[in-house]
Image (cartoon, rainbow, N blue to C red):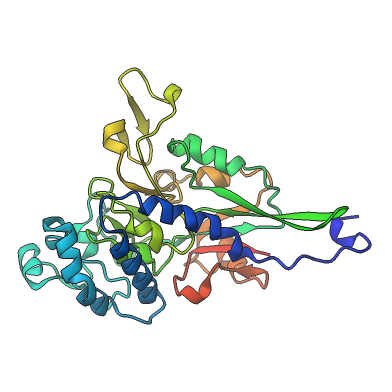
Length: 329
């Protein structure tokens, strides 16, 4: 007999979104350590969320913050096209557009290391993930696998497993909820980035150009899920060799600690593994078989069918972020 069948046990009413609060507080604490304006970051982050839910257009957003962003970030901001999450208009300063010869929505053209656009007859997958919360046992094997795969610094875990306890002894149960990056279709982290270091790829994954990011951390507080982190340069001593270098798949080559310090960080569904035809490390390692990865654009795919199940839900849908991450109650 399961706990939910036990006498006197009531099925818990789970507030999944409340489980994110501690991580949102951590993002604010990390923003306070930046050399850039904290107040500006909080305001830009709040309005970036308004762009995601349709209350504000990207054009209105950058009209509002153009002067302040130019004063705060200078030439690095001025020479970079601003992202337009709503895809209606690439909002950049006119002189910048003339310099870069940019057209509307030309963000991929200014992002480095982005694959060329496929031919029209090539199918572009929209990578998404489904996590069955009834199967998740809270073992945190996904957390361990992610750290081993991406070699994230101490305190940085792209795959945290949050938990909530319900009931009173002896009728007690716990709800576990893993939270990687949700790979939003309308990501406020993209909208808020003043230099397009964060951008959305055609395959549905939001990623970061580590060569461009200068660590303002505004994206950390723009994310409504607390799914972004900052690399302060800490490391596991045994993980690096004598020269202070390690091959990090996320970066794609050997980089020193100095090279990997000072940027925002996040899960990208182990994009380097997807490119090889493999599943993300967290999916491959899940002992409860609770994680599923696939193409949401393929109606016949397992993840697309699971995403349309009556048990399926997404976090903070009212934010308008349209995440490619689904949970099953």
